[in-house]
Length: 351
Ligand code: IPM
Ligand code: MN
Image (cartoon, rainbow, N blue to C red; front, side, top):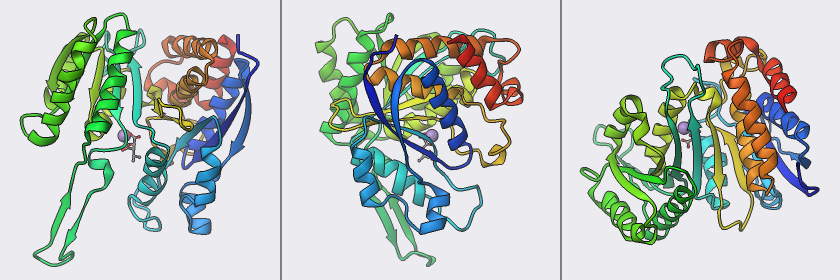
């Protein structure tokens, strides 16, 4: 049962298949009884080409005011020359993550039964990705750009405060899971400054959580373990860029990126959190009705949970799990063939 509370949700459909999958997710939340008041924001490549703006300050202020944000996808068509590379990613998505202090990017993934290869049975992980620092902070620059002697530097920002709050969140989450195992993933043998800060902070927090088993993997080895020994991993805590890369791999290994959900959380709740599928705009299938909405639907379930509606989240999750395991629909290929509306209807029917 949903509570009687009315939740104000800011919706950014964005680009490509974003608007289609987000509308499907809203339909599912509605069918699960969640009471929402939706405010739609027109942002993304189309809005940029139309008015030349990426995230106007007054829109950011309006977004600060909602209870949660549901986002589809941001990104211009590949090879588009009208929108400079990185402009929307940095100016919209990353700006929201930074301005709203969404310091945890939570990405849970588990392989559904019967998922065809490359899915790995037995993989059931949650990645806690640091979401406001690392190489994403944008530190760096050019010297003598465009000359034969040009220099480009790209730094990685790691603060004790940022690393500690992310790792603390991961310990808290891990102790609520049945397996209670937390793996730090980094590259401490090469990134000896940032890696040292992460490893030291991890080691300092661990004694406060004696019930949590801890482990460490270099990021390259973590890739092998995900494929060969998926049962070794439960909760992973890692740097922003490693988390980005690992969660695409995990998406492919847990039934396809079409299922991969994420929550950009402000655990301190000083403002709204933002929920989005891990996949991008997929312009090649936009408007064809073939987009798989399950990742957006699962992200919406995470939103319901964070809004204090765990029963709604649970019902949606269970319905998605049933659809993802349905042999007539399951598998990346069949889901694309089934199409957005058939999959959405199947989820709504099971709810
Ligand atoms: C993701 C995306 C973003 C990221 C891009 C669109 C900036 O790949 O959410 O994983 O790199 O974080
Ligand atoms: Mn990514």
